[in-house]
Length: 539
Image (cartoon, rainbow, N blue to C red):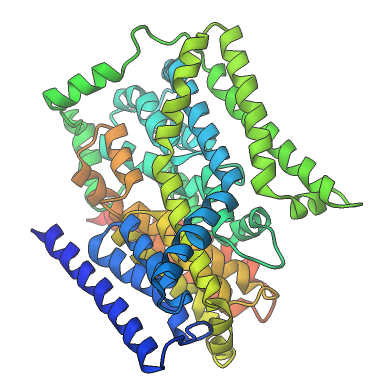
């Protein structure tokens, strides 16, 4: 009933928005110029509102595209269709073709690694090498960090690999699910060679910086992701927990009840159907080598393309001038060919099995491709309506508030991502607006983009409807509600610390020491956990 009501309200908002646009256009005698005015912000704002109401990103983004097309075509039926199909969806697919190829190839490589049994082999190696609960936690964290190329791959691999080890050390499945979730999206959001870097590059429009360069420059200010790592390591070394997680860990330690979710008969049957007929022959090294191959060739592709674009200069200049839409497909195609040859030569997959992974990899990336296409289409509409110029002009009179804007952007991104359950949809909606708020010549430009990306990850991390949250629960075989409730205090703690860091970054901008925000945030994180340990020990 609630979903029906949400859909009805969303439909009414869409109809109302179209009606208002038509009335404004008719009142002006037709041909009203929406571009360069407040109306340029209506498509992304309506997309945000619908996302908050429906908690679903696909329809919200598409409605935003439609509204943008209606205004950009001056309320022309055929012009609207042309804007949607040509300037919106077609240009989004054509413009992001290289990134879409990279995503598909990434999905294929993930499917190949899973098919080979290399993930299972790593689990067997870890069980022989890890002796303590602290070691199990750190090993889970390290494995999550190593699998940085895609969050889906991370969630699907870390849980199945590490659960036998964490079980033997009496770690609750709720804690395992948190470690999986905390090293999925946060890791991918600071990895230049990942599906997330590709998606961000596709959503960014900058006259001065390439998408991949902007992504890299924003990494030091992605406080939520970076402080999450500090939080996990410190929490593990201090050997304590708080909130509902403490109860689950104490129960696992004293009674041996790890909170493992029991599967229904249908789920057990589905898992058996998905299992390979024979166990994979892959070893631990067969997990590491494909990832190394992918990284090496993607970096080569980016640098080769960058050096081709400049007459002279070094690695930094080449990386700054590279085109990720060309370099990543180059590197990933070569990497895929070599990985297939490697696995066939090692006799851990057959040629037919390798070919079966191609459609599987494509299917796994369909949601990501859809979100990226719709988000880019919305960006195209806002660009056509001159949103950047309008916001830039409006912010010229609000320079005194610049210091607070990164923190505000972070909170807005958190709320939108939490409501929709998708990071990609969130930064697809917000990045065009954020890019218009901060001048590219200011260091706050990178802080603002990072605040958007960090908020998207934070909201996704907290959201019960997030795909990575759901997959982390499934990967750890943990009750989903238990996972959400136990990790929420941890995620909110890091979010609050990140908010403080964005306030500091805004205040430090004039002094040119925005970089100081991160080390201060790390110190505050450690101090906060020491305080929480003393508080929980007294309780």
